[in-house]
Length: 435
Image 1 (cartoon, one colour):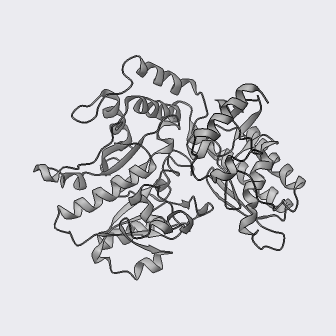
Image 2 (spheres, rainbow, N blue to C red):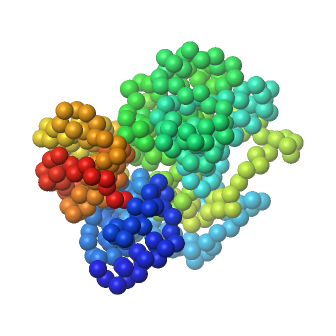
């Protein structure tokens, strides 16, 4: 191992605190984490010179690949002008242009954009806007939200209160918004909507719930229910937005327009942290008038010019490179490859796919789950590294969500890595995995 790599690992273990990570295992003397140093297209390199396909788009963010020349050039050009200017009491050209461009995807419906920093804050904005809208339109009794079991909407306290995955959120229960969790539209129908402000859902597919798609037509039916009850429909497209499902936005697959649309991750192509919450003009109008009606919420880096430059460039790439048109054959290729893998390996219990998002669930040959303490999914993802594929599991479901620019040949590399790792570990070593 190179001395630089050793030095970086020592400094990390001495001072860094990683998300969703058992730090005791991470800092164990025997654990040598990968130090990622550069990327190009769908590939990443570590400090030792090894190359890996970015199988989960750097935690679901990267859209067009690393070091895309168009996005890089746009960021550099903005750097020569200003890296950051305040959006409180000022504006700048790229923020205005980006807001107009996002709204143009939903003409006459979603006409206002509130910028923030990440997926959690995009959802927080939607929740606060929904509640304050109720307060200012004579519906102050509508104070509750509905979210779906096993959903995930972020880690800030308000967004976390929507979460339906107990290992993330149960210790904070009762410390956020008033939330009712349901499993289906049937359960939603049994609720009295009189006190409900909004219903929040990840459209088409739940991410942290081991990549589980919703039934076709469910989102359109939910929109109809919200129309009947006057409940705001809040769509969390932090993961599904910007082409992941085969359409630019997942809601477009069922011709649904929400009352709030939450975007982040892929908004900038995955290059810089930035988020946007889109909403309707009629909701915005309730915030006009006296000072107490203003939305007193914001972040220091709201509408950061570098993020806006990256986002505008990413949208240019969609248009100039025909990203969505080129994606459908790759979605079909991925589907066929995953079906072949499942047929060949009893350890693959189920494959769940929505567009360019896939979850490969591993179970024991008799169909039973691996013991939780074995961390079989983590063990398997570590085995994938020596075959040049980087990804992370959700429990024992291996996520495959590469950048949209990934070629069919690169998809075959990922599928071959999975095939080889299973063939070499037919029972999967169920000793506890390191991070």
